[in-house]
Figure 1 (cartoon, rainbow, N blue to C red):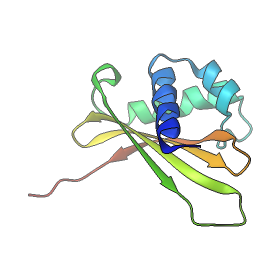
Figure 2 (cartoon, rainbow, N blue to C red):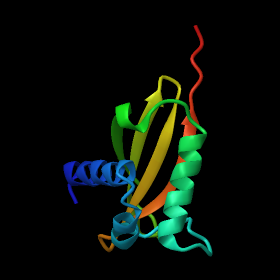
Figure 3 (tube, rainbow, N blue to C red):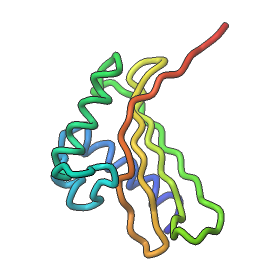
Figure 4 (spheres, rainbow, N blue to C red):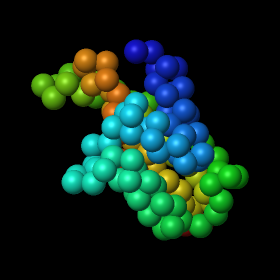
Length: 119
């Protein structure tokens, strides 16, 4: 799969999160960290938790997508799509998707992040 296609998928997933379309994400991509929870509910809970841990508005967030590729391995993992939803200068939500060697993409994790800026 081309890098531009993976980036497009990243943007689509972010837009689904922003519009709270958790059902579509669950159906299309599943969720690796759902544990014993319903997939839709797990995505929604983890997204809301990450959102609560940040300041700023999801509506005015800045989106940045990064695609990287794993070195050859026996796990079948090929590419990582990192979707940064920057809510303010120093915090946001990180959404990670993984492409495997069979061409399937799944949602790996949703978490908050903070960066520290030092002058």
